[in-house]
Image 1 (tube, rainbow, N blue to C red):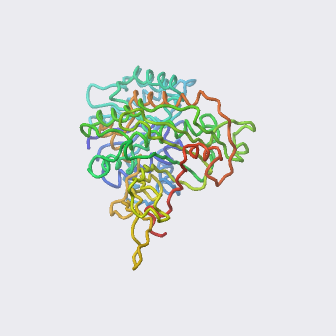
Image 2: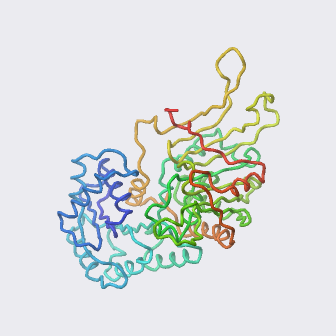
Image 3: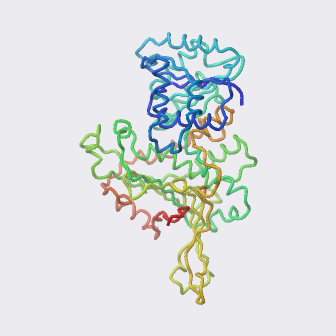
Length: 483
């Protein structure tokens, strides 16, 4: 890999603590960071070299559900040695020119080993313009030698209008090929494996159409609440927080047409095509809020923020037209699970019609988390003299593989350094997803209160039962060998 400088704006943020620094450790451990590359952390707090190193050590030694393997002292030392710290306040109301002059001088002192610059903004979007303009003022947003790239996190706007404004802002200072808009779901192994499973095998792809598929379900549930995120979460709600990005990314990857080649442009265009073919159905959306949400920190007593949604849509294409798609997500639900289920039609000539399982459809499930894997639900004969039928799973499970899964942030940072934007969003993709979601946000639907530990409000069940279907309860047996 080429040598580079990774500059993190907001290195002491929660995002940096939970995701970025652990991901950098993993890259270091796997030898994926070139020898002379450096990582520059920027934050407001005045920290000495020793204090910054102590901070990195504390981050990597703190229990983290996103980084659950042991850290090795030698790898930690190697990572800490390549990390540098610059103190500076980059908020709009502050005079931060000194910070960018210092950054420029620091990078120049590194010589040719830092010709390539990757900026990671672990900050609020409100700070972007000040940061961008300051980078431009100091000649840090473009280079004659080497490359300059920018990574920014979701949310990319809060509706279509704001997303367009943000994309215009980005393109004022950077070219599109420099911009890496990150939705970490696209970096997950199972999401990427859907492409290989679908297009690398000839078995199931011919069945992925309206002739054979009855409907599609997507569930993204969490068994915990908003925690300390009240201030942020109350301003967005569930549909904007995960519906506009994570769930739509899952849907488009699972339903896109085979790309002509495996390239960034072909894969991205395939995702965009599905987004533009999605038909919003604002009459068929349910918003919910868990009982007790209004007692959480930084939440108003009359908050109307959704912590749950369920909606219905379909893809208006020759391949998928008429196949309903049901999506639901929420907090404080029965379990934490994220998966896509493609439910096949029951053939009219299926044998064993007298059996109790005869009307159970074959279902293909992509489990994103936990117990990641892919499973096909099938009927099998139970061992023994009598013809008895069981419902079983034919499955691929990551837990059976010797190689551990790479964290999504680790993979996407590596992709950005390598210059591969395949699993990032470009501006048309972001805007197409907001154009779809905006249609549901315009409708002022009733907010349904639901009990923690349930699967959401009763109205969500009625939504799918109106079509004589039911929500699938995620299987505890999928890639869980302790069951």
